[in-house]
Amino acid sequence: MADDPRMNPQDRAVLLLAQGRSSLEVGKDLGVSDSTVRTWRWRDPEFEAKVQRARQELLDAAVGALAAGAKKAVATLLDELDGEQPAVRVRAALGLLAQIPPLADHVLLERKVAALEAETGEGER
Image (tube, rainbow, N blue to C red; front, side):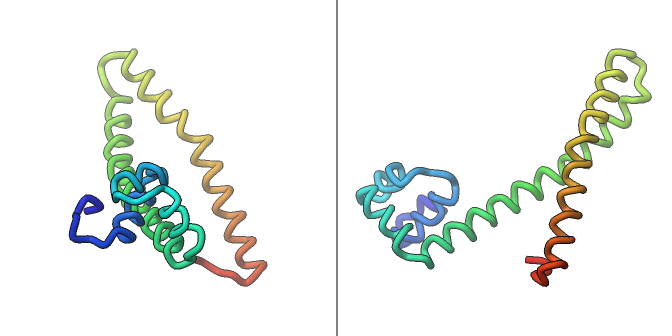
């Protein structure tokens, strides 16, 4: 979509920047200087807000895709725990066990954020 020449340059820049491209790369793609791209980004709060929204949408889509795949991956590992090959069973068990600490950290962080939001009255985003 960002390569659609019918889009205006700033809209194309928003998508390219959201994808992690540098101002120099975006400028080259659009035929403008990198200082023009930086000016759009840093002097126009609405432009930067669009970049951040587009980046969040990309991230949300990626997380959704990973979540869908994670469910299948866990099911596969659980199936392999009952497999016939001991080495495969051990790797499956280790794979599952390795996920416990980061998951526990995530749950704890989520609880702390919720408590802080409740304390400050901000609620959910």
